[in-house]
Length: 562
Image 1: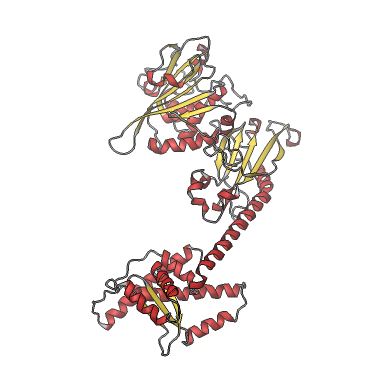
Image 2: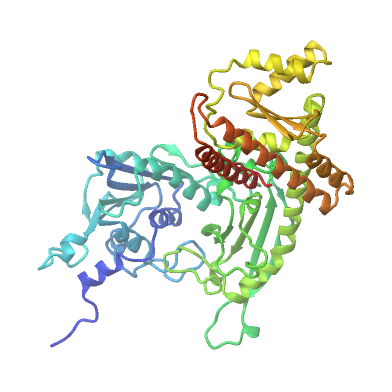
C-alpha cells in the first residue's frame, strides 16, 4: 500500500499556523499586485456589528489594475509552491508561498477573479472546509471559469485588466475594524513608501494610504507634505558576500548594503517631553524607536533588532532614540545574510553583519543624541530664565517644592473648608507683607491662591520653627529663619560653591525638607475642624497622614526628575 508523503488536508490545516501577523498577511497580496505592475491597489474590509464586542469581519477584498493572470497561471496561483517568479530576486516576491500561506493563515476561503487585457474575467477558489471534509469535497483547485465580479467589489479592479482576491470565512481577526484600519494605514504607508513615492496608489476602505518615512526626510505624499525635512546624513555603503554553497566567503560575489540615517527637524523636538505631544503622535514619531530594513525597496522589518551588540551597556531604542532614523537597504540576493523568511516577515541580520552595521551607525547615533540633548538643555535653560523673570519679584526661593506639591495627586483639605480665602489671605498679607504696596500685596494673594502651598521665609521670636496657615484650600507655610534649624541649613548651603555636585545635592535635600514640611501642613489640614481626638488618636492619625502625604509628594518629586 502506498503511503502519501503529505496528507493534504492535515498539512494545509497545519500551515495555517505559519508565522504571520494580519498586516504582514495582507502585505503578501499587495506584493503580488505590485509585481503585476498595478498602479492602483484597493483594499476593502466588509464587517458587521458583533452582538458582543468588536465588529466581525465577513470578508476582505484586495483589487488591482495589474496585468491579470492567464487561465493557466490563475489555475495554479493557489497551489502552494507555484510561482511564475520562483527564486527571482529582482522583485519583492520570490518563493511562491507567501500569498497562499497568508490567505489560509487568516481565513478559510480564498476566491480569485482575474482578467488580462485580452481575456475575460475568470474565477477559481479554495475552501479549507471543503478540503478537510471527510470525504473531501474539494481535492484539487477548480479550473478557472467565467464569472461576473461581485457587485460590491467591481470598483476595486481595473476596467480592462486586473485581479480581485477575496478572503472570506475570516476567523483570525486580530482586533476591531475600528482599531485595525488606522494601524493598516501606518503599516501600508511605511512598508510601501517607496512605491507610493513612485506613483502607485493604495486605497484602504476608499481612503488614500499616505507614505510614512521613518527617516522623515521625504515628505512627498505624506500626511504633512509641508513639514521640514529631517537632516539626512551621508549614506553609508558597504559590500557583503552573497551566500553560495561550497564557495569560500572571500571568493563569493558581493552585493551593496546602504545605510541611511537622519535627525528629525528641531521644530518637532523642541524640548524633552515633546515625544508625546500631538504634533508628534500625529506624525507617528512616538512609534519611531527602531530600525527600518528594506528588501528591494519594500520594508520587511521595523523595530528593535534583537540581540543588538552592546545593548546592555548602552541601551538603544529608548524614548530619546525616536528622534533619529535609520534605514538599511539590501538587494534580495542577500536574503541569507538578513535571514529573510519565505513569508517576508522579519529580517534580522546575521551576527557578523549585525556587528558591522552597529559599528557603522553608532557614531552617527551618538552625534544625533548629543544634538538632541543640546537642544533640550538650551530649551530647559530658556524656560528657567523665563520663569525666573516672571516670578523674581514674587519669588519665595522654594518654587521647586511648591511646584511638586501642585502636581501631586492629593485630596482636598478639610480643616479649612469653611474658611473664606479672601478674608484669611487679606489678614495674612497685612501681617507678613505690611510694608509692601497694595499692588504687591494683591500679587502675593494671587500667588497664594494659584497653588496649594506657598512657603514664606519669615522671622519671629519664640521656639516655633514653622507655622502652617490654612487659608481655605491654599496653605501658606511660614518658616522662622531665626530658628537654629533653618540657620544651619542656610549656613551649609552658603558654604558650598555653586554648580558643584555637593551644592546640587544640598539643594535637593533642601527640596526634600520643604516637601517634608508641606506634608506636615497637609496632614494638619486632613482633620475635620470639629473633630475631637484623644492624644493617642491624634498622634496615630497625624503620623499616618503625614507619612502618606510624604510618600505621595516624594513619588511626584521622583517622577519629575528630582
